[in-house]
Image (cartoon, rainbow, N blue to C red):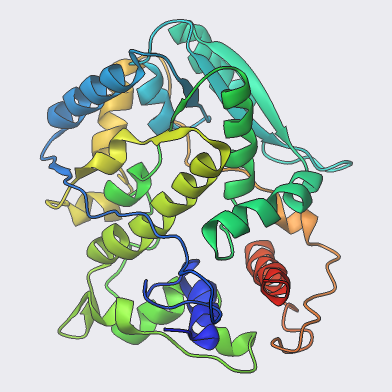
Length: 345
């Protein structure tokens, strides 16, 4: 069914079109949606997770491939299980005249320990201008802000002769890396406000406020945040990485995504031990290193959108971007870019 208002609203709330039967436009194919209903191994403890990641990574990479390596613990764990000499790519965003987060020194440390070849992929705003159209045309939807850098790195990996690209993605979702959002119990209304990236009525003249994904994970008026993440957030994140890699012509490999952890110790998470099983494995594999603080994949949207004048299309309220953060401005910007593509479809 065609429902542009629903599709736009859903993207702003969830960074994806939640209802997989809704298209943006007549005669347009549905937004590309990859199946995330595959079998996932139930993980109960640290040893099970370690053994599964080791076996899966070794099997997938025995014929060759590259790894995306950040300064965090998820990809660092996988770096222990790839063959020596494997090429590791680290993304580094560049904003002229601005100092932004650079994970390459931390990633190089893991490369030195594991005897990997370190290569840096510099990401510029020009890459967003160049690559967003091709990624959106392939996805038939607006794209997540991480897809450009994944795509650029995947293009380089393919040019370098690799057809597989290994990521630590979904570890935060499956093993609760987001201890801040899990710090309390949420009523339905609280969590709708807390999780929605942008409430559609703040941006769009015609809008829906979509509650179905939340209600599905609501019991006695409270949201099961971990369950919600493992459906809605998991699907959105997996599809973003998959789309970027597939568009570049390489296979997306994500061993953490093949697991699930339902016996969550929420008290440990709320005491600050987020992602406790993954942390235990990191400490085992890198006993001489401190567990680094979690940071999102760097993308300097605050700097890039500092002087953005906001959307101009008639679907948007004028000056709706005022007081929005950089991430929110990006999602308004990319939605407008996608609507421009629809005009020429």
